[in-house]
Image 1 (spheres, rainbow, N blue to C red):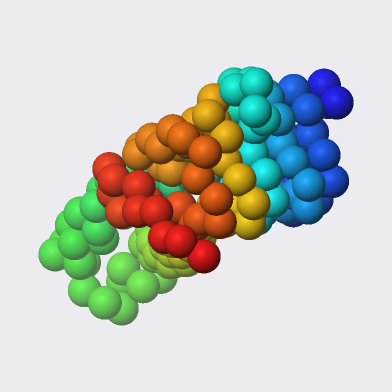
Image 2 (spheres, helix red, strand yellow; image 1 turned 180 degrees about the vertical axis):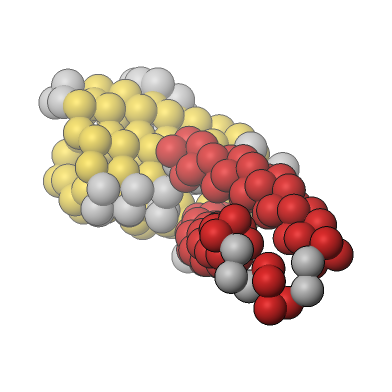
Length: 187
């Protein structure tokens, strides 16, 4: 009751009352979540949400802001590397036009430019791999659901990415976001 729980993995609770739960994994509750707020990147499996008194309970599923920030940081780093690579390529072309291969290949500046280009290309490959991993995480998060194996009482608001759903006493449903619309499937 009244706890703040922020973690990387799944959160498993029996009962949560007026708490703040935040995870990059799933939130699993075998009894009830009443009041407070919860955020999970990988979905929910709960028995009951809210209570008959209509206590405000907000459940959110989505992409963690930290991941969005990291993807943007990777994009910015890729752009910066691309600019540096272009400058180095221009310098390399200049040297190739001015000097024959046997002379330029022995020049320290040519070797430094060549090594810098190689290093930046390696960094670009690493950044692309990291970005792909984050994009996979984002796609996985978009496919996640809120599974309610009991009742969702009035006062419960579920936010799935940008779509919003408000409970009216539904029982045994699974919520999934299709863009700006929440699809409700009976279990």
